[in-house]
Length: 136
Image (cartoon, rainbow, N blue to C red; front, side):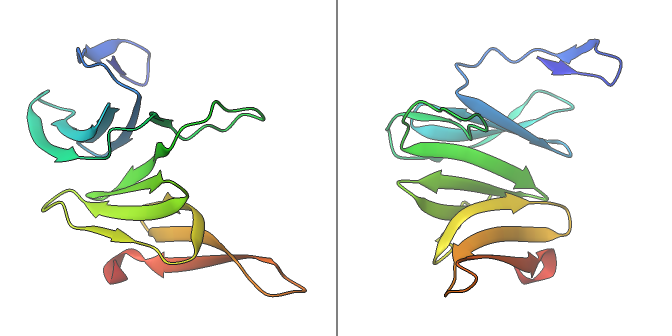
């Protein structure tokens, strides 16, 4: 269900969802083996992008998470971040262009751009990089 700020139901989607991300009017839904893009305002299915048919879920933010190979991590401004077998991917919804982010271990999208963590050299083994939206 898509809820308003006051908690009332705006729209119901009957989808076997493993995860979802809302970014503007884009409702991105992870189902087994594919990523679906819906219009949040109309409910229309806009695109379906194939993904590996492996154990999948939204990114888990708990101390213990069940093992999965693919996670839907984030969405913003027509882009989606997902991780497959430890490799972070950036998918453009407009055309399905899918690129990996070399060295990234985790990533987040905002309207400003992409933030991702990667391994650095000692004495700072954990690093964060920002890529502005205009460069994605």
